[in-house]
Structure formats: structure tokens, C-alpha cells
Amino acid sequence: MLTIDFLKKNNLILFECISGSRAYGLATKNSDTDIRGVFYLPKNMFYGLEYIPQVSNETNDIVYYELGRFIELLSKNNPNILEMLATPEKHILVKHQLMNEIKMEDFLSKLIKDTFVGYAFSQIKKAKGLNKKMFEPMDRKRKSVLDFCYILIDNESILFSDWLQINAKNQSDFGLTKIPHFKDMYHLFESDTNVHYRGIVSDANANDVQLSSVSKSSKSISMLMFHKDAYSSYCKKYREYWDWMEKRNEERYQNNANHNKGYDAKNMMHTVRLLEMALGILKDNTLNIEVSNREELLKIKSGFYTYDEVLAQAENLMNEISKYAERTSLKEKPNMEFVEKLLVNLRFKIYQ
Image (cartoon, rainbow, N blue to C red; front, side, top):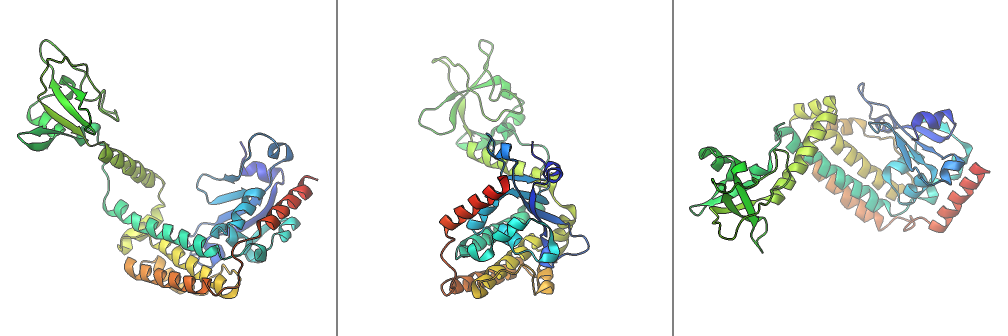
């Protein structure tokens, strides 16, 4: 397994820089130090069976990209990768002379309109998504399949688990058969002294109902519907919520809880920063990652504005980006023939 320690011990790092808030000029006293870099694989690994495009630590605060992957993402105008190439000298920790052959002007293109704005949209969605996690907590006890089963009694739909409790019955005393042509609908049969069915589910951790063998002469007592789509959706949200709970940055969570605006303020700050950066590229054909409006961006991070106010600011920037994208002298996209030759020459020099 390739590790960061292995990269360093074997001098495989071509480039390393401080990134994130410290590089943008947005760091505060509690800011982490993010590291990004570029490495190359040892010759035998590169020509072997398993290509490794990226190496990172557990929290992704430190990420290194293999040279080919770095060039590939540059050619797509990936925001994070372009930022690395534009890192000011004071934040560069390691730089091999070969990295001087990778020039910003060979990669910047009109693709940034889609990549930067597309990434910004994802961050806007992510920022608002925090609202549900913060203010709609999920019980630690996971719901079961039975919590999504309903039966028809006197022309009314009743939650099956409630019906079992009211009638002091157990799910293991019942059986199901599929109703043809009706999605997730079943005939419900109750065990008696002559026959015992398998039950609705095999156990409490089951992810689906189970069928029983039922004679043609047996009469069903009702119809049961398993709302399978709702159950699948719930399971996905449950996993996401508790994964977020285990991995969340507690300080960041408390900051968002304190401002009580219902969104991830740090995400929205970086959304605005990213859009302002894209606008600057289209206006001046250059990329500057250090912000000139630190205090305004930190106000967004603090939750000073409502979500709608920040969203309006982002939408105005998107409109400006669309306007300047039509005027810019940037090429439509990088010259991929040139990009490929560049990568081949860099690899040739490395492995020679």
C-alpha cells in the first residue's frame, strides 16, 4: 500500500504546498493546515498492474496526486488543481524543477465556466443539506422493515407494527405470498394449529420481507404492502446522518448551530470565493487564489447573512461569469495534443 510516508522517504514528491484557508488568506486561529501535492510512482509500480492516482490521509487534509492524474485534472480545469498551480511562492514547500514546465497559460480555458460554477452549485446544495441534519436529527435506533409495512383493515391502511401491538400478535405467526402485477403487495396469512408460516421477516436486521409456502385452499386475512422505496430512502438517510455525526467537525458544527441560519456557512463562504475567483480569471486571464475581501468572506462564514442573501450573491456572480465567458479571450479548452506531449516528456525525464 502506497502511503504519504513512503512518498517522502523515497523522494517521490515533485510538488507540495499549503492549500485551503491559509493559502486563500482566510485562516483564523482555529484553522487547519491543508497540504496538497504531486508525486510520481516508482518506475516498477508505474509499469506494473496497479496504477495509484492519489494518496491521502484519513481526513483528506493532506492529498497528493500522481503526476498523470494531476495533469488530467488540470486539463479539465478542476478548481482545486488549478489553485495548486497558482499557489504563491510563500506557501510552496517543495517544488522540483520539472514543475516549472507546467504552465498555467497552457491550461486555463473557458471550461472554468462549467467547472467552477458546477462545483459552486454542489457546495450550495451541500450547505443547505446541513439544515436537515442539524434540525431533523435521526434516532440512533434504526427502523426495521416492519415499520414500513401496512395492512388493509376495514378499507383503511394501518401500520402493521401498530396492528400487531394492538392485537398482541407476533410477526413470526404470519406468512406472505406475492400478489402478481402489484408492486410490493402481498397476501397476508395467519398461522394456526395446523400450519405455521415463516413470518414476515427473518429477523430484526432483515432488509426485505420473506415469502411463505401457502396452500391454494388457505384464505388470506388481509393484504400487506411493504413500502420498499421509502425504506430504502430511509436507510440511505440513516447511513448518511450517522456517518456525518461520527465524522463532523465539532467546532464547525457548533458555529453553524450558533448562528442558527440553517446552512453550512463555511461552505457558502467558499462558494462565493470560488465564483469570485472564476470571474477574476475570465476578466484578467489570470488566477489569484489570495482573496482581497477577507472580512466580507469571513462575515459569510460567521453566518452574518441569511442563506437566501448569500444565495442571491452567488447567483449574481454566476450571471457575471456567464457574461464575461462570452467576452474572454481564453481558448475553449486546452490543447490536448500539447498536454499529452507535455506529460510524456515529463515522464521520460523522470524515469530516464
